[in-house]
Image (cartoon, rainbow, N blue to C red):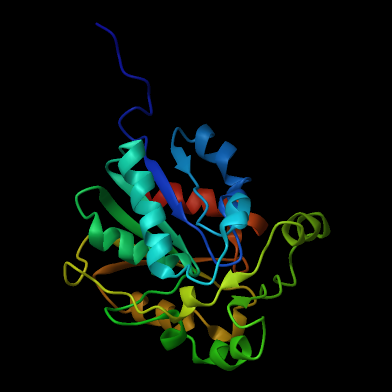
Length: 240
């Protein structure tokens, strides 16, 4: 009688909803770590960002990016998904989980926005509203600065690939179609150099809510870049 590989039953499919100004490429360091742990990592890029920057236009909004991810799930026939939302990707992941509840097994927010029905990113980050209103060319927003602990080699890599973000992505209010989400949810708060405590309110709220599992990581806002091994260990712990 043949025995299954040791990690066959614990292997997971992780699908990443990446952050603003970024794209799937930003998760490059995590791919080999996922493979070594026996998991599958899928990191699509939203319309208008990364290798799809040539599609950027003023009409792109949060709904566009939710549809991007829903189509990845549909055409890749993904099931039992561990859905990761990083930063702005928390807005996207919430919409995706709402509309494809049968395919998503659990949600993991990595230093991310956690919207309720009817909220936009601007509603959740009033500090950014004036800053973003004063920058860009009317429909595109330049990237935020990278955290101060970002390695020099990573700075060059990031700065060559980060691109402006369509402002409608921040203005669009999320419309939940199936009511409040009840699937398993975890929040990972990056404690190093929190940007104006943008994500602190979500950390405090989820930490005190028994419906959530709460974790912290000693890293800056993008641990997929600055602390991939620590992030991988934490993700593996959450899904174990």
